[in-house]
Length: 320
Image (cartoon, rainbow, N blue to C red):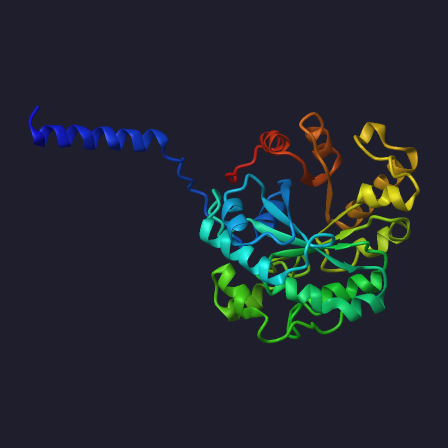
């Protein structure tokens, strides 16, 4: 075999090998920046994975191709490190896009700022704003006891000229300059970021996804009030903290084995989310994910196996 023929054969073999091992090309065209909101608008459940606060650039780059639809960046008990969070977001961008074509998975942070009362939230809303300025897509407010605190939470994440204006929320508190780094992470202009940086579904074009942990007996007593605050997109009942609050630290686990008080707490929060027409977050497992979806769970905390089973059950079209 002469040299020219040998080179042609090698080229053909290399092309065949590349074709066999290449990742399938998706024709899906994202319609939103926030992948999780896009799925919820399609009526599809969302699945997430958690990373500890302090994760930086390398962790972000590795997680850019995660099986999950969004990443919870846990800073309630993890490290409250905004520099690391910004590096994590840069890593997601450099490791992306996702298989669905989104620039990054959505990222939702938990913070050591609690929704316990109006005074606490007014004193600490700057922490909420610092997290969002890192280019993340939402925040899950822990211990959401007070509707007044929740309204300030929403207000803190709106620009003063945001529309629609909502009675009781007040003029937005985001300031000029907050759009700089975040707009680069989102891959859009600062001006476009300021138009899109608003809570959904309050603003149908908004890309912020705000949630509540109705996770103690005080929050439970106000479940219907906090869940109905305009600008909230989802809520959960936080079984770990709920169990501590009800003095049932071992009263949670699979739904079939819940202590009766815990079962009642979960049912009340689920009913409150349905009444407010927001998504309910709950653990899903491979053996119960279909049942959870039928019950009304729209955000699943669980394994990749559970998520993929759920996606098949709902005939999801968006690649994962």
